[in-house]
Amino acid sequence: MLALHAHKSAQSIQNWTQAYPGRPLIVVLTGTDLYRDIASQTQAQESLELAHRLVVLQDAGPWALAEHLRSKCRVVYQSCTARKTLTKTKRHLRVVMVGHLRDEKWPQTLFEAARLIRPDEGIYIDHIGQALQPELQTDALKTAQDCPHYRWLQSLPHSVTRNHIQRAHVLVHTSRMEGGAHVVMEAVRSGTPVLASHIDGNVGMLGSHYSGYFEAGNATALVRSLRECRATQSQPDGMLSQLEQECMARADLFAPSGEQAALLSLLEELKLSPHQSSTPS
Image 1 (spheres, rainbow, N blue to C red):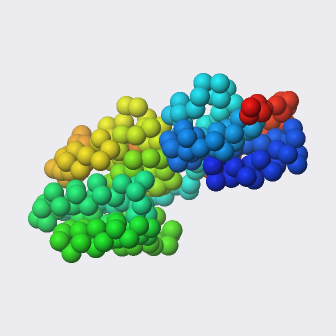
Image 2 (cartoon, rainbow, N blue to C red):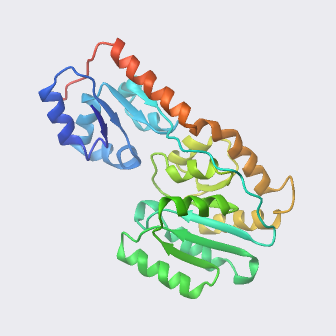
């Protein structure tokens, strides 16, 4: 069995264990698992103990687990197809953020950043995502009304969203909690650099030495980075170019062949190993 979410799939995990004791059980952990639920939810904690293998989606994930669980944890990067890196105008900086309007994504940081940027700075922000919390929808609409350089495009089809990412100069990712954001990987595989909050889920994907981090929730720091990208946009050694090169160096981590090989290796490992897990007391 391959279960997604230690907490949300807890009942299915328990049912599987009771019906098929000893058969392989893999639990894939998300950001809400790693950075919220397993700290306090008993069922989520039991899922970790019952699993024969735990899968996390980025390098920092194992460190969120108790030490005795790390030996059965494996990192499997998600993947997506690559897209051609487009030649982009130097007349303005096109910014895109992709993420539903919910608290974990912390869109308030983007709203505040939009208000700190003047309309004449040449920094244009497109925000894609469905409003899952009414108060954040109100904030997005008010920001769009007050800031002509900010557009909330609401939810768009995946192919259209990828086009927006591909055409943008930079993707902004403001989350306070992530297990391994698919949109970060899609940007990297499209030749679009990323400005991301400095949280474990982002660091585990982009690397500890990546130059494009800002403190989570710090709109002023985000705006500072956006302005530097805009100011050095035409410079081959400017911030935007540096981020492009650093993202390019990570792109192969998210290739479909790598994800496939990691999953096949995991399955082969389980086939060759005795299936034992700890039973919660």
